[in-house]
Image (cartoon, rainbow, N blue to C red):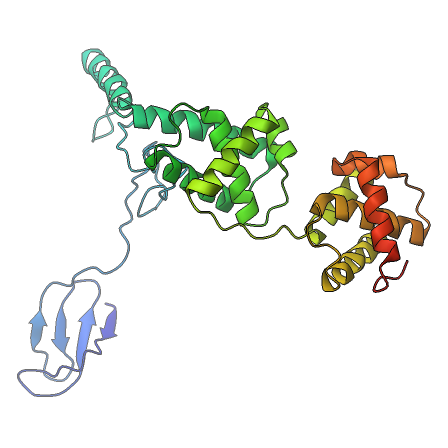
Length: 306
């Protein structure tokens, strides 16, 4: 017998002693002094060790998968169990199996019978494809799905490409979460024209009144350096150069990727790493002229040591 002291502040109705015990096996609550039984049933407060998983497994989970904005129904739809067995575990008969298969088909069709659901399915399928190519975190995906849902509520999708708008929403989410992804990266991953994504992004920014933080050029340093194998010492030196440029407001109004590329080139020259402007320009996705112009301004700034 497993006894547990019941600390509820209550006392025994018969003897008045505050020594209430609980028997976890029988569920009885009784007085430990005189043996008076207060209640015979104990309400279970622990988790339910029943499986609610789709595949009917024995995993002791209390609930199903969490809801997500990246699903067309947010993960709240019902699903007919794909295992052809009844509640006792016996296999279904041939006629019942055919009936269940037909019910599964209609259940799947009924979930996307509205144009809104079909739109969400197509958009979020494209979003998952972009996620794999751009290696985006789930938090950024949730933000992109939230922006797209707001755009759909305002009727911004009508007459426009779903692929371009979801790509623009993803780029906006990357900007909002300060994830270093450029328009060209999103364009190449989605095989969509950069001009179309930029147009949709401006539309989202204007109509949804999005407040986007300024991209920090220091975050772009590691991305460029990892592509062409620049040493850690040079990366730290470039970050220091950019930090000094931000303090002297030299970086104001400049493209962060071009500024990061110029700072890396300046650090390579300073540390003796043999990398050309073309190598860094190709890794950063900017032109050599941009690097030369930013390099001159960084080098001539009195607050930065060349």
